[in-house]
Image (cartoon, rainbow, N blue to C red):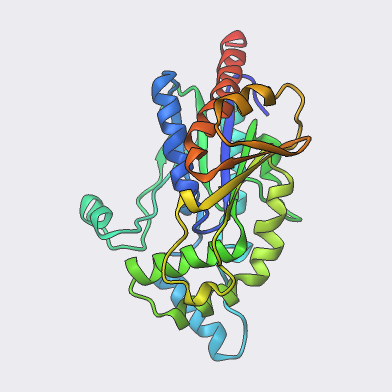
Length: 291
């Protein structure tokens, strides 16, 4: 961890809502005048979309399980760890962008599913902000958590996660239900071994829990809305957390455990603003004192 160059990481599974959380952080950064270097987890995938598809097809052709974006074979974990280490030491590093959508492809003049060239991070940033799948990943070769100052987990219960993935991939990529189901099954080993353990290492977890029936996610016609959900917020270390203040400010919230508060789903943005803003103050104030 670094006092001069703090790192904030939001980690979550695919479709967990980390992008929404990223927007909340960006709003806090803008309001508090924090100059953050933004790094996207997708940029540390090892392969382009076409390369990835070819590797999966080759594996499945010989009866093997194809690699997934959840696991180490398809990601440059060493480079991610090196970025965190280098930024923490001197505030420098490199990033690139993975092109997901047609609008991005037009803007960059490159095909979808490819990477933009590597570029240096801006000079003189106040912090590094990472959002992606592996902000708390640990393997026998890397441990990125040792460099992160504030680690946030964002995860829905698994049936809701699958509903969100089914609807997103069918709507935006034209996949069939069967194709998305195959992807879920192929990823399951890596999900259990590399995604789930991260949420035991985070400082705060935000877990969305629907209060409507999601017992068969593969036939769900709609994604449960925020207002049809609760959010369970768990603090690894509750010392210093002003729970009475949060309970007063967030209507219909309640404590379920000594380190856990439950809020209505529609209050997630408010809760994040109330919880995370003071933590960002502390990181930036600590940085100023050590410049």
